[in-house]
Length: 278
Image (cartoon, rainbow, N blue to C red; front, side, top):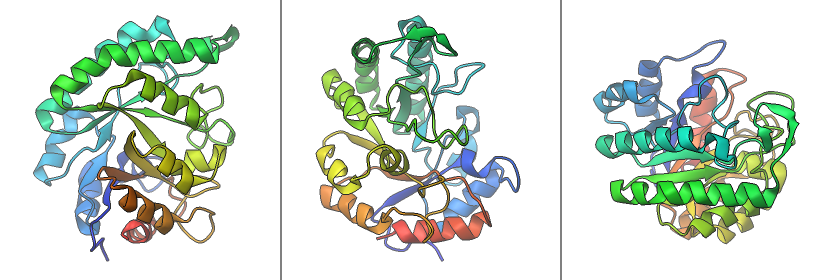
């Protein structure tokens, strides 16, 4: 059974269903998206966007790759990475503008001066914020001209059990800190990626926090907590309530299903899509 109400535009995060175990290729993921009434598959490389177009799907969100590391490690909080990040992000903005796709992801990055070396010393929160604001301001005008949004992501640092369940060392682990960076940039094309899973791990109080950040919401991610698994009755987040809140706020962006499957992927995803289809 697919989403029938369609008031929440749902997206499938490709990486979650294209990993170890029973993985889906892009054609399979697009077929499932169409079957479930999801208009987007996100985190698809631009070289493969033709597959999305063939299926009349959108890539609601994508990210730039930083060679040799996970994309959230080297971020805008560190000026030693600015030139490469800004160059790659401008290219991504251009590609999104041509394709008509809405969002490019941005990260604060890890807090160490050499992002891969904790012994290199820490970038202060103030310096990290200033560097992020400077980098995002440089990118904002290009994003505005091209009608593409940059979404800065908040991530949790509490869960160290798995490299994609938590990100110890990430500087942007406080939602208010990340939101303040977005607001300091002051561009309608620089937004917040609000991930219900990561915010729940770090803070909780999801509905009030959605309200507090309603003016800068650019993209939403969902996954169950604890564990970043399915959106089922073994986790603690009330997803229908948060979806109703998004509708109340007039949010018209995408909600990405970005959880790590622990059982039959189609059955779990079907349940998750239906749960968010309020």
